[in-house]
Length: 202
Image (tube, rainbow, N blue to C red):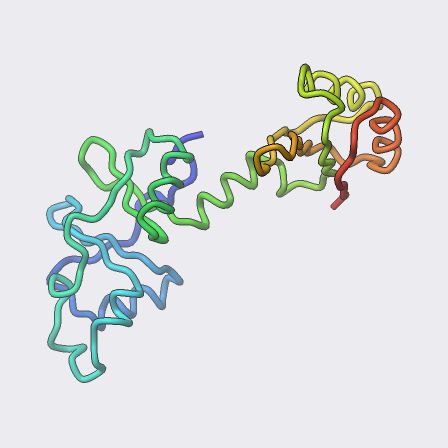
């Protein structure tokens, strides 16, 4: 899964000569929080609603242009980069979005919400499903052992992830399944010696 699949393509942009008032109207009208600043179709800066809120007094809106407050040399990501790498960039730099570049040209914008949607889709959370968190009886062949019980009961595995635990607490696997009778599945897993930590259906 790469950035290009989840970014907003052909984003709304602004020029460095535009007024701050122009930028504010663009953000409000289009319900967005970020604006790439371009010159001759090339990215030269980045503007966020936080820039606008924190840098100005109302009386200055007509005097100051975007070039006065934009972020120069903004953090960017390649369109071909993985969504995991993009997420790490956002977290590391504590930002809510960034421009997407391909062949040195601006091609999109990717935000925290875009990446959240990507991860929710990856985990199958956006569709009606069941979830079972299991502490296996043994770490050796744990996924195969649990999966065999799930498949035997006719349930479909959508995704599996290892839940982060403190050292020494053992491994817990979270299985996202097609909507099923989770309670019956819990009984079968416990018969096999696995410990079910939690389960739900939504």
